[in-house]
Image (cartoon, rainbow, N blue to C red):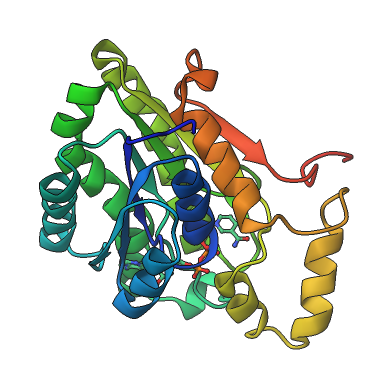
Length: 251
Ligand code: NAD
């Protein structure tokens, strides 16, 4: 019980990596606020959890919905110990000239501005608990990704934001870190692969990118989040932890 009766808010917590985080924290005794635009999926997950949790419908591209979600979490559980900014989208494989600046803004709004906004509203609560923030960035933040300029830039923004906010939050005893996964087997990964010419071959190729020979499981990312949220990582802040099965090695 490494997070017993402590409260974690997970954006995009109903599916994929977010669901992995939700399950890992709940098993450790946490009260989880599963914030997702898909209320049905969030409710189904919450019902299956071993400890109290709440499903909250919110689109993280909306500032007012983020504020409501945080307020609802505090109203229900009274405090906030960890904020996991996980909700994100990956547009289909698109070269720069095929994506308009307005479409880029849509990606930034969900993948980056939501991270800024949740922190903006959650900080006062995290100060009271000396809590932690974990931002789910991506290896694309440091490696880039072909035909994904907007996505990679949004993830890079999350990473530099993490470092700057960690500096600002150190005085409050709040630690801020990011996780940079390479490839994780999630609904997003599978729907992105489906936009490519041969999805099955693409998934095999993507699995082979990791020297460990496979993609990560969502709970493997959830366990790294738990590490960054507990005293086990008490001297780590402002870091982008590369959780990539070795994918960045062996140039
Ligand atoms: P996913 O699509 O499988 O799950 C995302 C969840 O977030 C869904 O439940 C969805 O409903 C929710 N969501 C999406 N947009 C939302 C919005 N605007 N408001 C509220 N909820 C929203 O995705 P995933 O693969 O689990 O990815 C989660 C995060 O991890 C993303 O930020 C992604 O960029 C990052 N990431 C994923 C991988 C990967 O290989 N899957 C690799 C690196 C980083």
